[in-house]
Length: 300
Image (cartoon, rainbow, N blue to C red):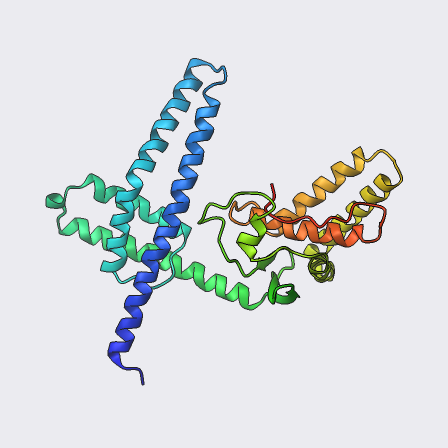
């Protein structure tokens, strides 16, 4: 039987882990808000009707206010996590829901927070936690049904691929040395070494491609369709033929692979270079007259 004190320490550790996770999520939120401001500012240089210009200006102002309030809201959410001893691992949805609650804290002075205020806060936190626990339970259930593949690559590393139960999507896990979403990494030839510890070799790509091309279901069809598009493009290129139509087909198939790997998420998008490079190098191996230089992810 566990010592009660040990159990309490473990619970407090989980709470503090959530405080750390909140810092990561808030960092990402800060980055996203800054990028949104940059996009808005670029849009304002275009000619636009006065009403559109005003709407852009208001959007810029609201986004700036959200950015400036974020540190205070983070502190408020940290207090709530500690007060309610929230141990379930928090996520982005949790953050967005708690940001709304923290707005209420900011707008209500401490001396005006009566019993009703805290009762309503408790109800909101309870609902947010139930939603979080439901998402986590669903995620655990879905992942338990995934079909996993392990690909041993150079440098004593393992690339893990997990195909969803419906065989429509695939998840990739790699031993990341530096997470580019949390640390600034200069894009270029050295980025892969900083992020993954070493470059990927031709043999690494061959193994990854062979595994992906063996997938069943929709995700397998997507991999094989991309391989076919690369084959057609490379064959035409190697024989000095017009590749414009084949290039378009290749691009469309590449987008399907990015979607299958969840590339719409900016945190995952850079890693989608790996499956694309893998299949490309796998097919190019059949055309020795074509450049066999091994491309690396995170180069552009």
